[in-house]
Length: 185
Image: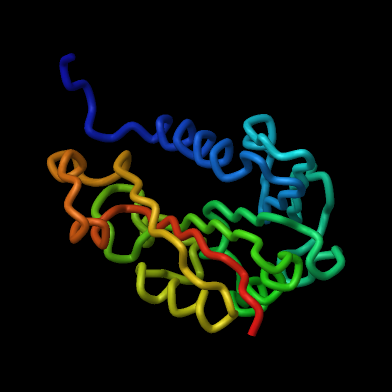
């Protein structure tokens, strides 16, 4: 197959749809924080998928710093390309932790400060925060969210490198995707 373009941003949305389908498989209640226009809800495999945002037309209009849900009411929480935009990252992570049940899963996707590519963390002037894999992992741990997996995203990495599957290159990928679990204590 001939190579047409090293950058395929439209494929990233497809990949996020696949992530949502996989992440929500066999889940009861799932919350998407910062759902925007709700384009990923249709890919959910959960029994109940709730989108929250301050704009657009979400299922629930609310801020990520004050989620209007009871403690422990979601099996999974997903946040894609949102955390870099919020003023109070720690408050948002506390709210995600609060609404997750014990054993619940959190998946966050955000641009990588150290990533190569056109769509890196500094490409968007609306990004308030810039994360590396380690800085986001430290934030997870400080909120009682234990990192289960680093999910490699090989779609956005600089073209010659995207074909290499070395674990060391994950730190240079354009986006970070962490999967964590809520544990008590």
